[in-house]
Image (tube, rainbow, N blue to C red; front, side):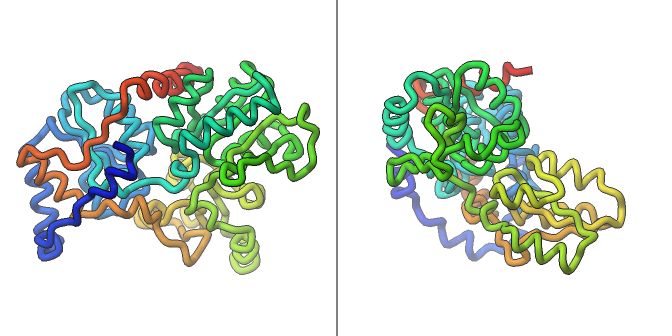
Length: 369
């Protein structure tokens, strides 16, 4: 059954959860955690709501959480507070006797959904007609298990926002050019930082099924083919936000995630992964001011944690990631109470063949020093 078919069958949350107070929901979750003990493991992504993150046994980014889940051999049930592709990765890396659950199956990722396997296989076939066997596929970990498996099958690997430069450098030791999925911005920013000019990058549009060659670059000079995908949150930070901030608060430093557009990343003072942003703020000089270009739940949590700094979102009208925000107290409690009754709500299980190839892509990344 496909993810869309599963979502179509998702039941509405029982009315009883709407009638409970927040305190009652929290008390029930804490009680279940205590009763299940080491049998239950709750990883929470940095972008989750505070009301959910308080119950997380560990917090981190997507791959880090999946690896921590894999290291936890005692847990029988891993209730992943994140989005679908993260739960898939956790399922692929954990043991067969461990079950990964997603509290709300509608917690997806718009970026991951911008590259499905049918589009990718069709694109690969068409691109091979233009570039032959000179390409290697790389995919951001923010992608479906099927896309990870595609990269594993064709000799490629996964990348994170922390190690993207290292993985792109490795890719060029394997092939003459690369196809970077599904986030064009991370791919463009990474390649540019490695000295590849924008003129040597083109974009594959999976909807129009065509190559977008903005600079009319001869095909033999193309080094990077970027998939036309993006993060719906990080694209909402613009150069006008930075320009307005520079005008009104010139002392404020701007730090953004490399999923932001190339223009925003170039104008920012600093850019880097979620971990890099957190560490930079953690080590910032007291009294300094920061405007952060990433998901709002994390920005607000950093502002609360480091109250000796002035921290705001680069986009003052920014909202939290809608799909990440789908997991709330109600869905977490519903998942856990069903678990106590022996019912697995929204188990995430990746096909064995897909798992084998996807783990190849992950392993190639993890092997890089």
